[in-house]
Image 1 (tube, one colour):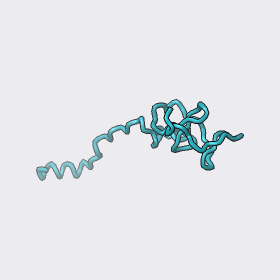
Image 2: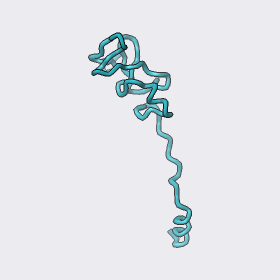
Image 3: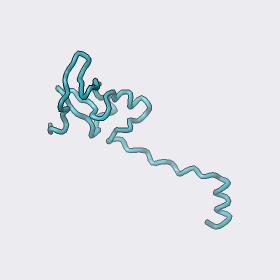
Image 4: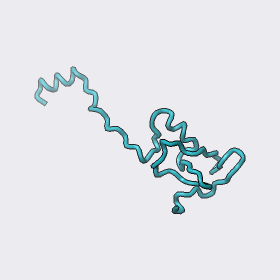
Length: 90
């Protein structure tokens, strides 16, 4: 494993793994494949957020590098403006 995939400066404490004053929680299954995953003592953690499970609670983690954002549906068009544009020939 390369050095950039390891949490440097992390310390194992009674609360868990501590890094820069934050207690890190292990990643969840949805995190697998993300480029932000780092390891410490054979366990994987997110390098961007200490509680990955909470980031996925709302649907999609905004830090996830392995999940592509769904292409936005066609922009909502006001039907009145659309009919006026069509009438003008635009």
